[in-house]
Length: 436
Image 1 (cartoon, rainbow, N blue to C red):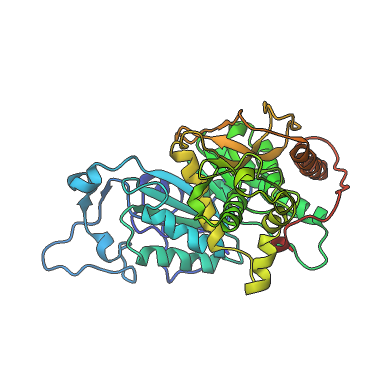
Image 2: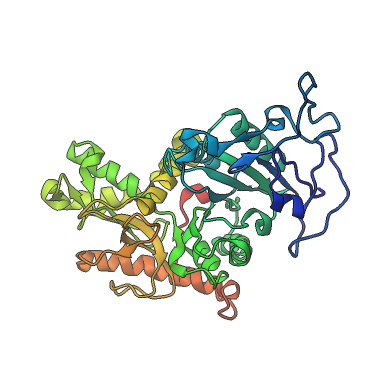
């Protein structure tokens, strides 16, 4: 499919890169490439400050895109955001990239982002949506729905399949898209296939994203995909990369609340240790219910070690058995929670779970992997690891098991992270059921 741009209100930068083609021209001539590979890109945007359309004399009919002019309806008019009291007090626009943007998770997430639910009611955003050639038509449909929703804070929407274009100047990158595991596919094959995707996306982020971009990887196996991504983006701090384990944390809180007979807002200090797989360790030792240690509220140690742990580890599979699909809405909610945990100060004494780079950790966990650990944030997008946690023999044994799995995954993708030839000997098939 040939490259082209459709811009409702083109910015000067977009005009310098590629021209606009009317929608009825579906196959315009090829354009010069910006990156090693050329992909189609569509940009639909409302400018961040002033929107200048053609001067229309009184009585003159405004032309549509089907006419010779390139403007369309209201986008032919001129208005100034700075003249409006509400928009004058808004924060500076931020650029947010979402990969796998035509998928089910994104279908829930994008509208939360656009509504102001995630970054706040005074934070305008630009959404940069990354898809594939196969999903491109669906991606256009997503952009159409975003247009029709009339979100005031959504100032720009652009879509494409070239990460070097979509990731330009982004300050947040939510990497959701990944190949699902098919029937008969070995986990090593899945690591290699998706690893190549995240290696390329890491290179693109390194080349064109903001130097302080925050990256949240959702596509599985997300811990090792995050490691691959950060290793291919050496100019971006490794601390800026996260693998999503917030859904696991939320599931663990729910199970503890159910057992204790309280609402789940009473559960705090919940940690998921390790890999986003069935070796993950939901930590009841350090968690609290209504301010009290879990083990003092739920005195059934056997339930905590067995039933609770297994329910959290296998919750995704249980959901698939019930409704025939993997979680989408709850995953989108957990992405929102993960972003909020980084952009709002952590309540005093509490923490949240995120899989982050292990270098410098004080828990005795191997360095140079991405491992879920307890974190706190001051709300500035950064985080620090929690120091005041207890690790007993039971917890250490299980942390060691999930650590071994991640080290084995790392050896499988050595060729993608600049560490020589890969040797793939995984300790067991522990990929979550939703990935098969």
